[in-house]
Image 1 (cartoon, helix red, strand yellow):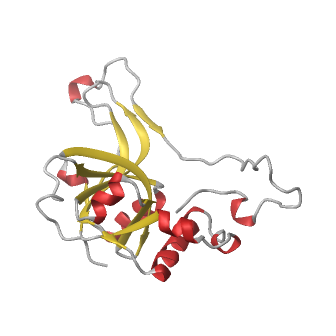
Image 2 (cartoon, rainbow, N blue to C red; image 1 turned 135 degrees about the horizontal axis):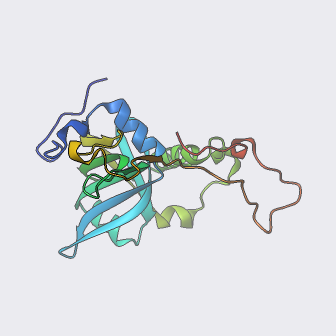
Length: 218
């Protein structure tokens, strides 16, 4: 699979060696992350809104209330900058300057396309639910007319895309190496706890298989 083509906006100027344009690695970050942050201009001022996202092939999707200022701005053609971050560790160096965080990020520039075909909308919402909990969509009732009317789904083509990854250890100055300060990396891992049933859950409904030993989206 080819890399994403670098553009003026996606070419890293600082720490360029951390830039990643490989599609598989970009996809892996997008698929593991649950939340993205969407930057756009609203009424002449910048705004950044967190929201859930999902990916199918070379398209990123978000959904939200049809009355949302973000969804309205984006469906009317406002350009967006979408960012995803996964944090993997604290990098504690011998100086504050070189202390850092290990991370995986993706930045996407683009303009959204509002989905209008009901079959396409339901198909991609199923993909979203399957990302969260594989097998759950088929257990749920179908969205009703009001829910469909109240929900907007936007699609962004993955064209102008880059990732940035820091995954190394401490990078201290040679003159600091003998300082009496602990240095190293504290790994960070996302974990999910035991599912907590709703207080009004029927007694005859047990834990579904897809929630047993749940590890989250991958």
